[in-house]
Amino acid sequence: MPETPHIVSDVMTQTVVAIGRDAPFKEIVRTMAQWQVSAMPVLEGEGRVVGVVSEADLLAKEEFRDSDPSLLEDRRRLSDIAKAGAVTAGDLMTAPALTIHSDAPLAQAARIMAVRHVKRLPVVDELGMLQGIVSRADLLKVFLRPDEDIEEEVRRTVVSLLFPALTHAVHVQVHEGVVTLRGNIHDTSLISVAVRLVRAVEGVVDVEPRLTGGSTRPGTPEHPA
Image (cartoon, helix red, strand yellow):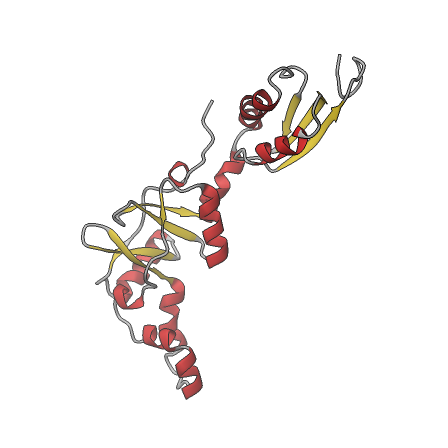
């Protein structure tokens, strides 16, 4: 069965639309329209990422086209006003670029996007060279994982680890990414540990622990015959 995607390289898009820092304004607009993207990495030299240019960067030119900002606004929005007069990607871009490495955990990428309010991250190597791009949609790919794959991994990495003598007594069921654990175990303190480990499996939406402790008679819901 396919391995669980744990790192950025497992879900990133390798074909990336990028632009050079000397690219003129209208070329940036045309490229975004042609490829239907809202932001692009800006490259220098052999492919080193030096910034990101987005639709928001481009809109400053339209916003300030006919305006005469007050002194207060001029101070507060100095960067946006400067971009209104920019004509190349190097002047328009947000720099330094917010990037991530291909071996970074998916959780790290999700955290950066949430905290920094960005929709995508250029993926770079240790020299800052572009390798791909990862988006919010890419991170959600883990939830397309089949229930059968999730069930197999939970059995292999959680049940077998915590309950090696009870692998046939602890039952795992997965429906739409929700994992249900059923069975009778000797040490109920392991229930919270099991829940944490199951939540760490990629593609898991939620966990319903229905594990009990002590002896039960065969035929009961916790100990099926």
